[in-house]
Image (cartoon, rainbow, N blue to C red; front, top):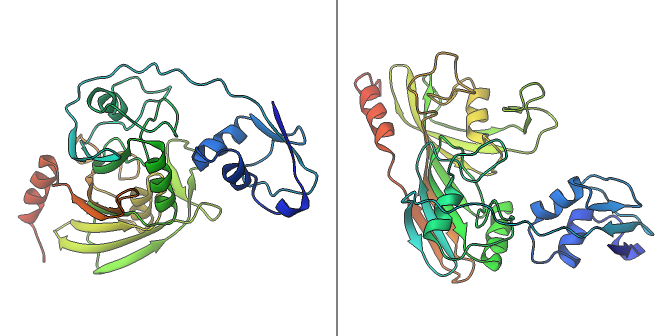
Length: 304
């Protein structure tokens, strides 16, 4: 167990940031925050929140954490790797594939497929999420960047937190959106009654989605969404918030769901600066066949 005594020079600094800068330089902020939540890190022998502000003479204790053992068997999922170099790769994830394992989900995930096709993956996010810098929902298709080493992972995570990784989505909504474009700025938090859902709540985390109408149909709209932040289910929650949920969404859409493959939401474009090569890179993923077929079906009733 490690003990750290805080002097006045560090008073007022967030606990997680202090630890990240001084004791966990090779880890991600989410890793440090999880250690705090799991009480592996305490202040004055008490459980505290990740955003705790340090005081002079605080005594931080860090308990040693047993390294996790990898118990995930590689599975040949024939992942669509659209770019790969020695530091990272970009995947076009199919609809219906969960990104990483969880205690409540036992089916093969993107991580199982990565372990089969990729020799090296970063370790920052632990053994059940190797290489995973960011996620998209199971029934959302499209682009993800995956880190092959910890330096790349750290830098991509920093860029993500500074909104320097641009993500563009295609979505079909219920209802006809009259505005040509708009911005939804509404904080998101876990739903107070349904833990499977997120919701717009006053005490939520800041969330900003920009949208633009591409086509209007008789009862639906094709839009492009650009994420400024990356909250869980952000586009789905925001579109429900303005009364235009994503077509086919079983959680945020109407009870009578259209289709049986989940929401029509596709991460079509991903842009970022390569953290090692220092080059700006942009990738595109064509929409899935089911998405295209739905658009063709709706176009027969297009109103503009």
